[in-house]
Length: 126
Length: 196
Image (cartoon, rainbow over all chains, first blue to last red; front, side):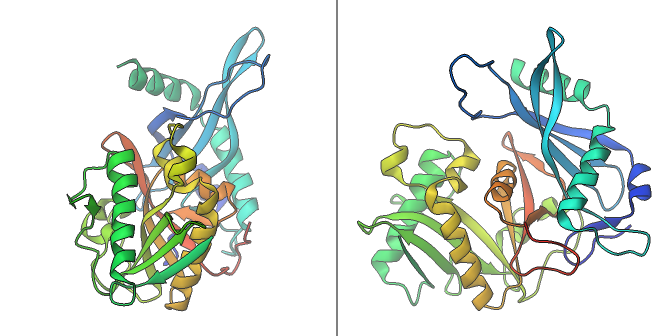
């Protein structure tokens, strides 16, 4: 695994699926988007995860606490941000948008909600 | 909006002073960065004879945006102050890569009563997109194919929202409570990667 001269770490999807990611930092948006009157107040933020590999793979995404079944749950919004560029088995780059869409399915498979929640609570409770 | 660019030898002295004063207002007074200052001016060791400045001025001639371009073949912020952001990757040292730093676009007349975040203050004013495009144009004229920059994490989100193709060079690091990262900004489309 190497970093290409253009700054990307190129991996196949199978390779990425075998990479464990650990939580790095999470935070709440300082300036949430203004909401119309009568709508739910929302809390949104970001979470950052990193691999233990060398070079490190970094991936971050935005989240929102959404109402669900009388309670709430944390869910990803938007596409991830990363230094990872997926390649196919012939080592051809994914198109940028497809890269991000597929990467989103990878991060959705990470059980990130509890760790992000714990990190946010610890960070902002101080 | 008027854009100007040049070096300390090509720009008029009063313009350079205005840029340094604007930087002081943004980075020291508004964002609270601990930077070396003198007489209300913010200048550092990277403000040299070969440093290229790009600035935006409003219809009244007031500075509303600033960008600083440094060639990576000479000392630059990422290499000398934040090399850890590349996480042991080789630091760029080529005429094809320039560093964008001290980027900010703030219209103080319109933001005077509105608190803004670090990232927002730097890149979300109406001037920011135009200024960044101008900085990219100037950098390309100087031979740059890509820019690299040290930025607060929120800048990445705003760059994407504004339609720029940028990606991180490594994981963010928390500096003085704020996650910062090194960010690549492409000036030319690359094979296999679609610009959005």
